[in-house]
Length: 262
Image (cartoon, rainbow, N blue to C red; front, top):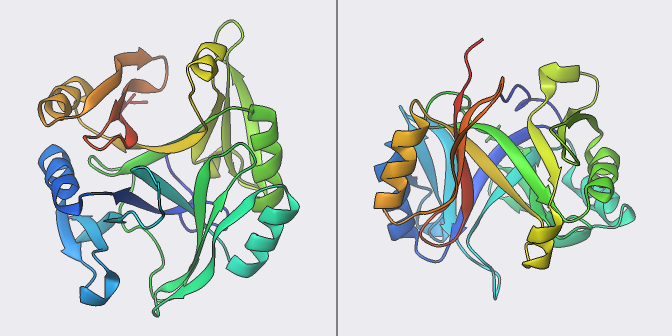
């Protein structure tokens, strides 16, 4: 579960880029019971997804030509400009240069050396997500990557992450990651090498969120009824919980989890 939203290098924002905001809002609010709050006419359609008045994610239009619908994970930084330099030095690409977002803060968008897109947030008036780990909100993030060794080295250099490998059967290694210095108390996500068959099929590196739900199977059934595609049906993972992987109606990958109780 997420424990590091206030720590530099930890997840602290999440938003969805989509070609149809109204339809995407309808899908996610129907699935999770969220509410949509527009950021105002000057925000170009961007708005906040909330539960109980607390922001758990955001949504906005696709702005880059050829961009695909996807969730973007943002990691907290104390200096977006310095992070942009670190990204370039480590072999990544600056996709969106550091820029001011009104008085809310500064953001920048990047692509890691394996092709996965992510962003950073330097807080101003907006500190970050107000709700995590509770049903309906994000509780974990995960990177599927074409090159796990390169990805681990990159994020370790740019965001000072620590990582720990966890063997999961023959030839499968799952790496948990998080800001340095906190051990398992600040781990926020996982990283996994895409299997060869996925690479042969054209899979590319991408980050996706896990949303906590009270009943994984029921949520998967509801999502499918609302137009989602089930990629990985609900399955039990020992000591983790019951998880499933989906694509929303516009192709953005996300996962749901009913976490195991202690």
